[in-house]
Length: 122
Image 1: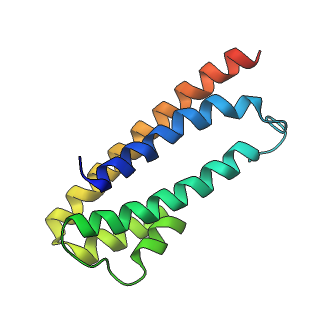
Image 2: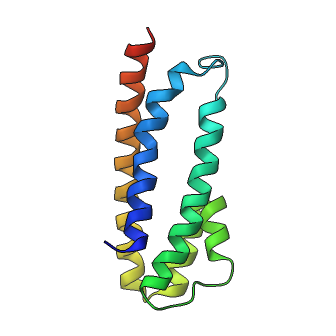
């Protein structure tokens, strides 16, 4: 498995873990964001930055200027920028479609982890 795929697997794996741990955070239910979400967001930023660089490297291209940072800080905009600047439009649309699918899977895994975490915390 290539490095970009390993990073993607690791990124997806963070979501159920964050969902599972969130109900145990001291400020859970009092604020929109808590300690777990802060750590999770920072981990996602690092993983997204590394994924963008690895994805470009595996494909033998240089990522567009600023793309890894933009992907890390504002993923929805950064992914559009990265895919459409680095690849032909059909490949870019395919990449964005796959990204949307990964996002939906992450949301479902987070919800499952949150449900399990809430039951364990009760």
